[in-house]
Image 1 (cartoon, rainbow, N blue to C red):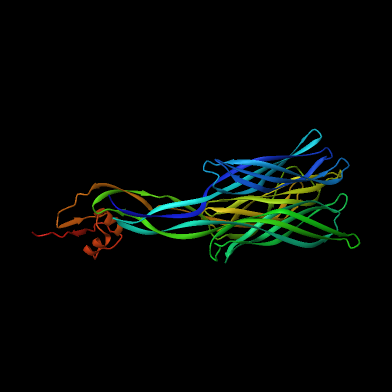
Image 2 (spheres, rainbow, N blue to C red):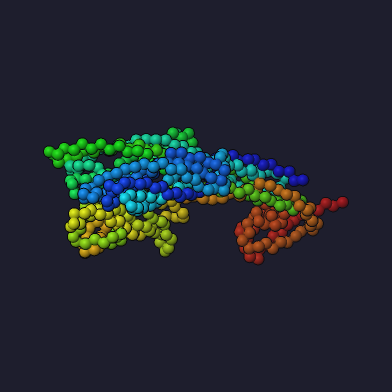
Length: 492
């Protein structure tokens, strides 16, 4: 039996991914005549791994701006808690799930005197757990040794606060606010994972009885999460969410000004990747027996350095309902964007920037018009990337009747996904004994392109013996080259 030596690498890493989708509904009463704008934000409350399932709960905050039967612009808010699950065949209670929730769509419908808002929520789930890799390190074999890179994931989480104070023209009431996180930088410092970016705070306000205005602020943030594994130069990824926001407004009618203070509570979670090199065996053979090798399989997934871009896009927008020159454009609110990377002669980011345009008609009625601005931006990126796009500074105007020209600033972050697999030798099964040649000299014609290892394996000779017998041979082998093998003969 061929003797072997093995070792076991034990680490922690991503074992798989899952996704989920659920709809959450909220009812508003008969005082709502016409919904002008609807928004839903979601906060994760708990998450738990089970057998074949991931269970998670959260809370959806619904906000609407509406016009009453008396043509007054009003606001209403409600919160709804929900529970959902996502199916994953590999999931078990020992795993640690990380769940990212996002609102994919908000729809409005009327049934009788009531108005119903439905938020379609998407969940992106990563599953982490213990990983083991058993591999061959030595034995009674001729071994081709190699260093294999493997990753260990270190999870961490924390919280932080961000605030901003600014002055605007006089407003009577805040109707709606929405927050979108732009996480622009994730890096490691000694003992801490640092996440930096900005929150785009959009506010819709009532200026006077029939006048609606919108404005936005980019509120910077920096979150430091303690993490023993964090070291400068290590790759990491993270997520930041707005858990809560408190707005204070102080109006000064005499000066026609209003001071607004925003206090945001942020939650953050991250993953630091530690790369380790294990010294194993990539290939092996025996000088005396045929062998069957078994290989271990380990998949590694990490991230590369983020690519950050800022682009200004413009063009003709698609409309959910028609407009004309009699309409007064009052505000653009709930700006957002969706995009995907598309391969071609050049890589491009293609998507759409969206917002709600609030207009006032000649009849004195307000209405909300959904506008969509498609865009296509060339980018320099390699391989698979996670895409994050923040739309801000969006504006709309009507140069030709019935057509809306829109502009928006896109803040783009592309995070390369690094994936690779390692396959070290893990086991050896001994076969039949080899029939050894008793010739003093053998001439062998190898395959063109073979290296020293491939040649030695074919000849069942150690690489150093093949090199010593053929000092002038060059690798890789060229067509027509010959290899001479000398064998010592014992003279009786």
